[in-house]
Length: 147
Image 1 (cartoon, rainbow, N blue to C red):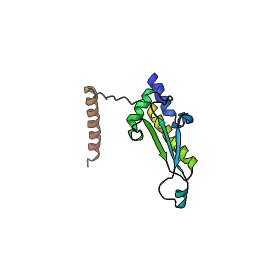
Image 2: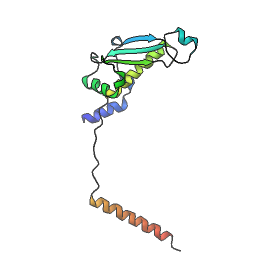
Image 3: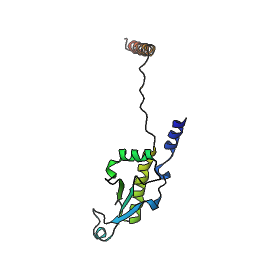
Image 4: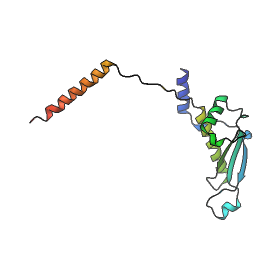
């Protein structure tokens, strides 16, 4: 029953339901790269979010381990998570985008792992039944072509 409830929760919840305390995040802004002309050279629109994974008290230990396993490229040697966004020209939208990315990652880490199960081979009776059905169908098709 417990696994079924977890599946229901993760199936109908979205990453937007993940709550991250913003005071625990360290936000930095810098000049973004790419096209944009003079605007890129003048404004600090690239948003960067950092926080230490080990001191993140809003995540449990399983989520922390799964985060490191699923997203090793976002964790540096000090154990900090670094996410950047430079999708738009506006600083606030880039910050929202980076926070949404983080929420989605944490949501993926909160999902239960899928358990592997094997499908048992069919019984001898089922095999005979299938072959008999195929033979009957074959006989029906053979009778159609008689001229």
